[in-house]
Amino acid sequence: MVTPSQELGYNSKVEGGVIVSRADAAINWIRTNSMWPMPMGLACCAIELMAVGGARFDIARFGAEVMRFSPRQSDCMIVAGTVTYKMAPQVRRIYDQMAAPKWVIAMGACASSGGMYRSYATLQGVDRIVPVDVYVSGCPPRPEALLDALMKLQAKVRREPATSRLLSA
Amino acid sequence: MSADVTTALKEKFPQVTDRPSADHPAVNVPLDDVVAVLRYLRDEQAFDLLMDLTAVDWSEGATPRFTVVYHLLSTTRPGTYVRVAANCAGTEAEPVAPSVVSVWPAADWHERECFDMFGIKFQGHPDLRRILMWDGYPYHPLRKEFPLAGIETDLPVADIAEETGTRVIAAPMAGGPFVASPGEMNLTDAEPRAKDESWSDRGARPDQTALRQVKD
Image (cartoon, rainbow over all chains, first blue to last red; front, side):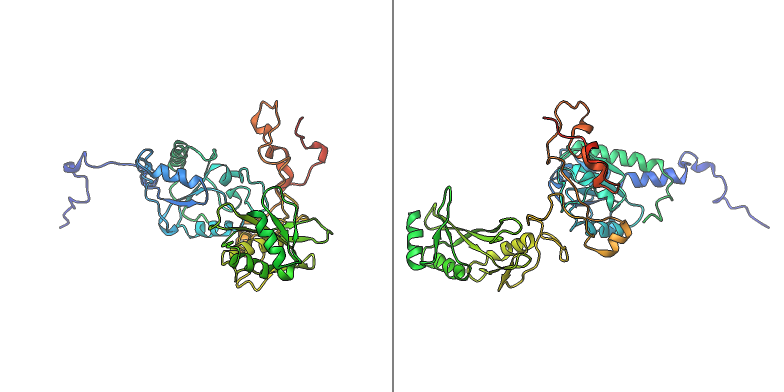
């Protein structure tokens, strides 16, 4: 005689304790609210980045306060500052070492376009070596601008299929 | 007091000559004597601090092409500051000067920077490598023949360069940084980099007249 399993079937006792959703929505919800930054602080923008981490602006409100200095544990590289050609390969190497899915915020004029450094020594925008998701204007940007960039990035992550980034380089 | 330094120096080293200077005393010294002169200034005249060590490029084809300049300060005689200049020996491609790391350890990184920017070989330096640009960079950027915008070359690391397809590019400044065109209402068109981005990037260079000039 076969006894139907009470555990696997519908059980009225757990009704109200279960939420049904799409996997994408659940996974992206987790990703957006624990986006650990890799603080690529290369110049004065890093000072504003530190201010964002402080109590007044408090990036912890968005779940991104855990600055990970190991690329293996970070999700979002915040390139804060002037990237020289000498530093560019190291930035790319650290980006390569980050586990997918991963995102990049180019913080400030220098990281976005080379800024005022039109010179033999400065990479003219970090998007030449890594794919950038959000650009932040400013020299340096206000902390609110970086928070806005993080919120924009979260909105972008919410829109994309959860599996789309797993194989990205 | 400042005059005393040059007077005493010229008594001790007759080959030392005065050098025109707007503020602090300055002297010209033959390259062979520069280490002895600097050692004398440190030990006998109490110039215990090497403030700066730099070089002058007198332009292509000039003789001498390069002059090394030492800025000395005495911390025990406040306000006493002297500059010592010496013309480099060697060729235009490889000028040479003696290292003064043995006199002031502070000269170490200054000489590395000077080598990096001008290509001056400091003989006797314990570790004469580039300090700002990467090892293997083919140029010396502060030389007069080096264009302000830079010269296209490869990224320092070959596999990164191959993967990203990025090169070190020339980045012309279109009249210099922070020189925007007055009267332009659209800030994107007004800022200097908007004028020449098309050819500093991967695209071909357009006709020169097509570039927007800074208005008077």
